[in-house]
Image 1 (cartoon, chains in turn brown, orange):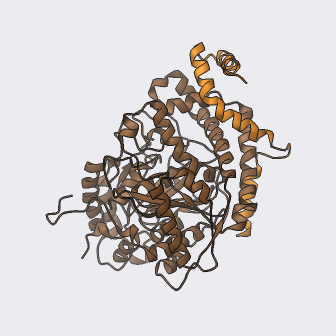
Image 2 (cartoon, rainbow over the protein chains, first blue to last red):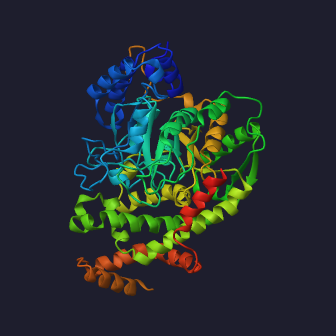
Image 3 (tube, rainbow over the protein chains, first blue to last red):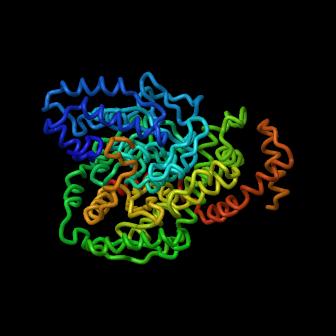
Length: 481
Length: 67
């Protein structure tokens, strides 16, 4: 039998539901794996073994009829969510942003569905970079090759899920912070529609673009989590009252495979943009993925996505304006508290005018309308790159000048931020490995609230491929990593 | 706007807000930020007066109602 930590969320939930294993045992297995993985890749800021095992014992006493859909499933959040007796670090040792909320909706919902938190996950400082480098807590390292970056800012979340230390993780995505590390670490990363999952109790970065996202091994696992986290919360001013989806059954049907399950689906692609942005090997893997989609019945529609470049500029100004509101006073008081690449961005942000902020918000609505009336009227799903190439080496950031490190972040953001700006759902899907054995992903996007379409598409792809079943940091026969 | 004028403007804004900003730093910041803001001004110039900052949320709500 497979080790418990090798099971996917869906399989683990089934095993727990059937009484084949208990929650405490499942937590114990994942905690052991998480400790081993953490030693290698520094994905956790904190592991709470005692708390998780205690919760596991409590859940083992819950009557079968009262168990939630994620009963006993271990997880962990990026450390941006507040708990009643524990403020988040946001990736810095002295987090001094005050939060009014005393609990986080996403954690409440996950734990209310029966999931068990094993600890807190590493991230880029303040969630304001995309590499996974962190001088205060140490960089999270890529489990496929620890000399490479994880991407960020949900760095520990992607590394932990990829290395089978967790069946799923909860992250945050303002401009690609779930999708970028998911691509670099070879897991599914879902940024839902803006307003789909409550952000109550999370450390903000840009109010107009922040979302709570999900990282999991498969599209089906991500759907099982989204079903629990989604839903209106009047305490989150960004929440929009759209019925919560019930996607797991639909996505499970796709994951089970079938005869041309994507027939009729129009997949849009801007080949020129992709070839301009990406290394040849990444383009080749994306093209191979498109071939799988066509074999599954989808049709390819050629698109011109030049408009996304303008969206990126406006998204950048919007992020600057709102991050300056959050960090400006502290930054001016003590700039050295911020890492150099964050300081570069905050310096620029301090020159942002109030009228720039309003103009960026005015452009946000127009950009969404243009996307809906243009590319997303022609195609049901847009496919594009999730990164220019596989994860760069860690020293490309640690040994780089602040400007070079910032440029790397910006190159990644350009592929993701336009979709964050328009609020549409987007998903990072692993589609293979480069010649060095590093994962490569593509990004799928669809109309607002169409997470189901993205997850179905990804599940159909995963029914025909096995990239998502491959895992790094395998144990030897002697049980060592 | 030239780097020199952008630097002057930044110095003026910084002085008004009580932010210490050396001449050289103001011009460096202006040079770094200039390409982004030049492109942003071009985008903003294309806005119509009734492009409302609240439209984004309204469109999302409408899309949610359509299902």
